[in-house]
Amino acid sequence: MILEHAILPVVPGREGEFEAAFGQAKAIIASMPGFVDLRLSRSIESPSEYLLLVRWESVEAHEHGFRGSPEYQRWRELLHGFYEPFPVVEHFETVHVA
Image 1 (cartoon, rainbow, N blue to C red):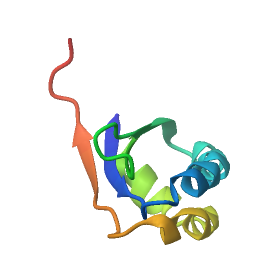
Image 2 (cartoon, rainbow, N blue to C red; image 1 turned 180 degrees about the vertical axis):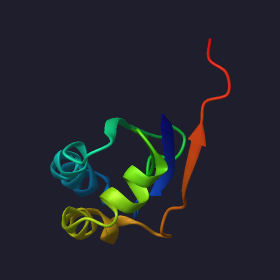
Image 3 (cartoon, one colour; image 1 turned 45 degrees about the vertical axis):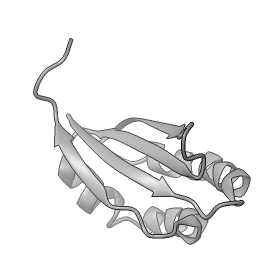
Image 4 (cartoon, one colour; image 1 turned 90 degrees about the vertical axis):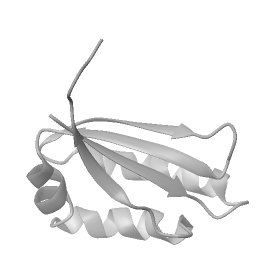
């Protein structure tokens, strides 16, 4: 299992629009092979920043499956115009749990 991590810096004043668009976009990503689940959280200290955590079966399911799919284009149309600057996405493997 892989955890995708991204801080999403949304243009201030567009948070409501972003959350509505994400409400549509989450169905796209949830339908992808290898998708496990996701969590989108909004920062309390910096309310224009969101934390996106997505669990995938593998990095390939995200990088090649999702990002290489026709559905990804719709995801981009819905969400990519909200970010300034564009987010950095990283993948993590579990080392310890409690």
